[in-house]
Length: 520
Image (cartoon, rainbow, N blue to C red):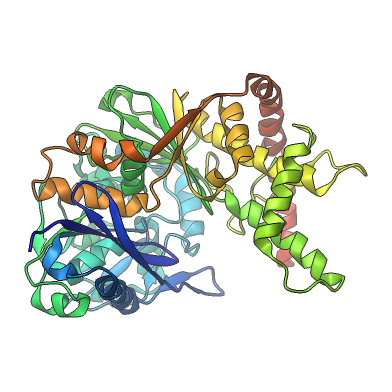
């Protein structure tokens, strides 16, 4: 039987997905398994390390139940997953503690002190990435200070996908994107000793795994792992890039010769541009964002991410549903509530209200960092209606997106859009007008798994280069270009400065609210 499938395994924060693709990029079938986050009272956000592997194995076995003869047909298994965080493993390969996730806030005071000193800017100049509480170096520093016994037991500090790759192959490794933005130099694409010296982590150098490039390297699935996941021993396993790089690749951010932007408006908002010359890389003066080596040699990704995108929409839908329940309504259909609010927003006047989409309890991370930032409506009156609120939320998300592209110093020729907000034609229209760029929907359902699988297709020789695979794996899944509404763009050009000015003057208010809520 021919080896005609590649499996992409995408271990997200809340769901682990196993997706089967044909060698030319067509999605065959998929399985999702919930992934549990344990939130702690002290700001911690953890996952059980063994459970993540067992859930990944369960997803792969379930995929085998759906796809006929999957073990015989699998040419490669590609692994990607959530970025940042700390997964500590001892010399025998056993976890020494639960995994710290990118959501973990315990290192925030350490990060704040670094950002306010010369350490933050010096670190960013080397790695290209602004230090934040999600980054592993801050989490390891916290552990050194508070639980040094765990660091003493550890032999390797993984990220999520690295742990799964280790369990599948026995190799201790990370990919260039995650290794470099954490401890490396974006120019040399290698570890840089100055990072550990700046952070006082020289004694933790041994925790850094080897950096490998999945497009040129793969390892065989071990006998033990094969039994767990239901595939054949020896199946090539590829360590893909972390999820945002994999998603950017699978969703079309890489288009040689075109200045595209890539926006993913899911629970959070991610905005991406690519640099094709290291001297063109933009390092934000505001100490925000990431620069990562892209999966294509000689290419780098610039990333700006705001903490909440569709989380703001979810809040309003939940608020409306809860209001209906207060007066005795039962069996509220939240999808219908969403569609009704969307229609009312379509009928609302543009720019009636200003909204800052900082609804996350973790505040904001891009293009400014303030964990105390909170959402707000400006301009409410007795005439304000639910549709005005919904439209303002769409506009606030669009302005946050424009703000991120501003920090990336990028005016996209077009935006390739993925995520839940892309389902709303109105939200797409507002985004295009606010950023002044036409929108093209990404119709690839599992772009992260697809990006990892395309990397594996190159690794096993199905394509010579990533660029060779774009015509099969990416181009067929890009929708038609949706033009800019120029009249609406003129309105938003006038409103955007007010959007920025109003949040820039809120820091002291957020600080006061923070202390009131904490009772301090």
